[in-house]
Image (cartoon, rainbow, N blue to C red; front, top):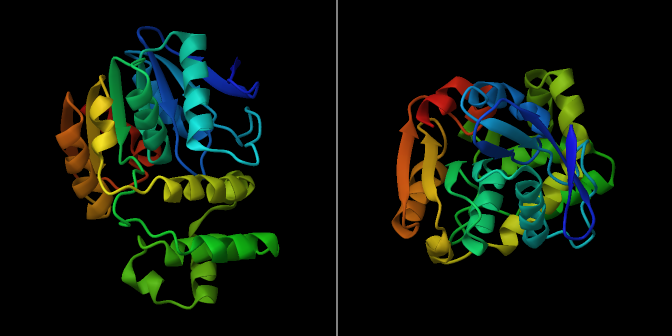
Length: 266
């Protein structure tokens, strides 16, 4: 385990494995670097992989009170400078961070993103955030999580129409205690990161036209179309050197649950 120092002095931890060209893995919400170690071990056959723990995770410093996308980009740049890596793999919110960093500074030669959380034209719902925050502040952590799953616009219809108490019970059964133990401490960071997404909602993806990296945009066929196909297509139209890979049978959590399918695409 090593640590880089971000622009504001916050330590950003990362684990390194493998040999070859450097590649940084930037993960999504409600996950830490350890959740991407199976993917990292596979990629380590071709790369020296650096698995980043974003702010608010066990091996990095806390989020600032006014934590922003600028902080996230600065943290990734700090790991770039510490490792010398010129490739990055970003998943979901981590994909947003990778793209935002790449459009600001030409530090990457290769960019791999899986279903980046780039909000456009109100296609992502954020009207659940206040209810989520209220439940967190009252100490109802499982209720907050259930509220997010039910209200964020990505739930299957049976979940979306189910009473919240039922959703909570279903999720308690579906999520193993070890998985909940790793997610539970990240519920506050999850709120902050979704508020960052909400502030970045834009009428188009045009700002990413300044990305110079060779970019592979990946989506799974089992994910919601808005993030796995529509968004990927729109990004491919504005990023100068972009290709698209539609991966059969994969959902949004494929980088964690089905890493071999991801490495095959890369």
